[in-house]
Amino acid sequence: MSDSDKNSKLNVALFALMVSLVCSLLITAAASGLKGFQQENIALDKKVNLLRAASLVAPGKKPPKQEINQLYATWLKEVIVDGQGKIVDTDTSDGMHLYFIQDPEKENEITGYILPINTRGLWGKIQGYLAFENDGQTVSGFSVFSHSETPGLGGEIESAWFQKNFKGKKILNSQDEFVSVGIAKGKTENLPEDEQEHYVDGISGATLTGKYLSEGIKSTLERYEGVSITFRQKELKATQPGLTQ
Image (cartoon, rainbow, N blue to C red; front, side, top):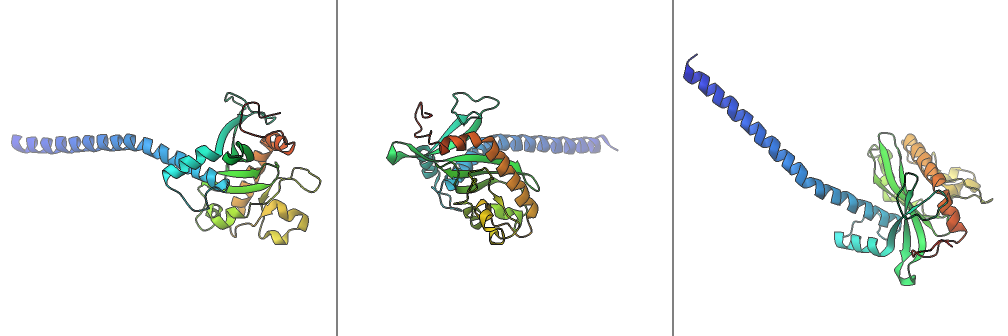
């Protein structure tokens, strides 16, 4: 092989190496540049799902960014509580996050609260929000922020028809005992009458998704039971210092 042929092949190899290096740098730069944008979108999606759970945004609707931020700042307040439902100033290992729904027209009176749901699903994590009225026992809304369930089956947990069925369900039975709220295996109308207000209709072909979501909701409600009790005792009034009486 002549020296010119060797040089030609070397040049081709060097050129390929340079192209690969440049492409790698461009991809890395693009990923870094988009990271902030992606994080902003994730934060915005969380806000809109909180607003959906609070019935401040209709299911399936996504207002403009400015409107979402305005509604969130006006109506919702994130706080940290301990196991007894008391607000704490700092985030500790045993601190629990939740969101107060506050009415700006009533001196920020707390009209409800929202708990974050983070549980296993069939194929991955299910993350969402479960909202309550300020009686500490009546569900006022539900939304799903993220999941990996099968489209058309377990993926129906993000559909409006499924989520709206949570509204009005109770986590206490007629003896004021905690029973949680869950997903039925089929229609709630097939359950005993005294159980129907604690379940929502199940999703056909997605029994395991319903099972895992029910378990996750119950586990979350048990951890936040101190908060619910505080509301039942009417000790939370407004999102101001000293709101626990």
